Image (cartoon, rainbow, N blue to C red; front, side, top):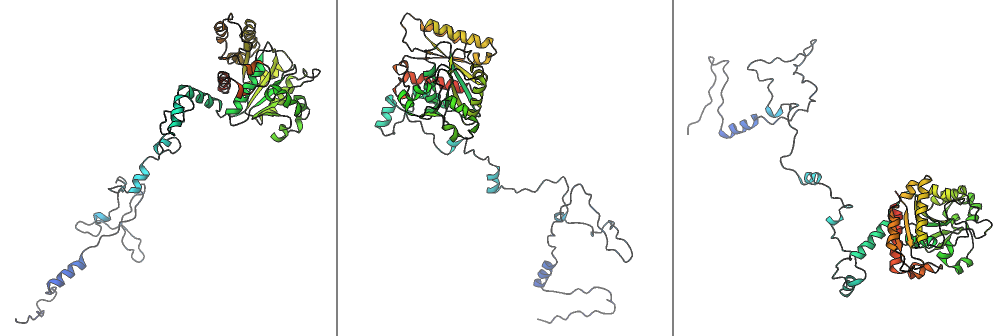
Length: 416
């Protein structure tokens, strides 16, 4: 193969660029070296600020001036990739969302209000009856859930145990003695103590030597305990600044806390409206529910303070014709003396204490009273209530206990 001698430029070829022959490898390397690389994207310019034109390098003594665009000159041209995006350009987004994006955009489940999303709901355990027997025999494998009666009982318990904001007071009163006023106070107080998380308080404000504590503790236990009364509490009320100090003047029937009435006839009628309001203010600092066992009638000294601080009323009545008339008279008196709301929202409790004869039309008496109060509840005859001695829930009939639960639920429903 003959040798190739490079052409030597002659005189005539002066000024003409010399074309050098190269191999294919050298040509490919040269092409790669001259291939333009992707320029980095320029910094984003706020849409509110106008884009500044390019400027030429300043000469000595002259300010920089914008470079004019010359036709055919590609000095000012910018590659499409390097052009600054306009303010109308859409925001940068990934074409396919990542797992993190999917989790962030999915709604967060509510673990508190929707526990059923993660845990299967379990039926309540049936108690008593065929359902309860089947549950016990199968070791819980067959759970038909509670029956209608048990569901009603559970609903009463839920209403009684409702959380309260503040302190409330219910007055239990009547125009006639011996018709179940104090036994209702004790029975309802023990029921509240059984179902509520906070202990209730019962105050004996009866001016006629009330026996509230004796009915809750029993005569023998009360006599053996320190007989502190509402009078002792009033004498030392300024020094009481804690529940521990207040407990020295209280009696306890389980979780029911009681303030005994004055037993001395000479001072039993001396409780005034102002003194009762002082006691009520002290009790409201430590108890959310208070029951006040009032005396017979509505005109004794403390009664105006009791009605002024009461949130609702329980009117005790009996199935005797005279008891029903007195209950209606009590409601009319309240409505005509500025206590219309208390009368309208009152709960009338008819206690069959003396087991009246069949000649008395109980339905007619209930109808006579039901239209002038918020709710009317009947307590059946029960020897555990009628004998005037200790009242305990364990010895009461199921029907009597249910009546006290209905009264307690109605009382709490009235606390708004």
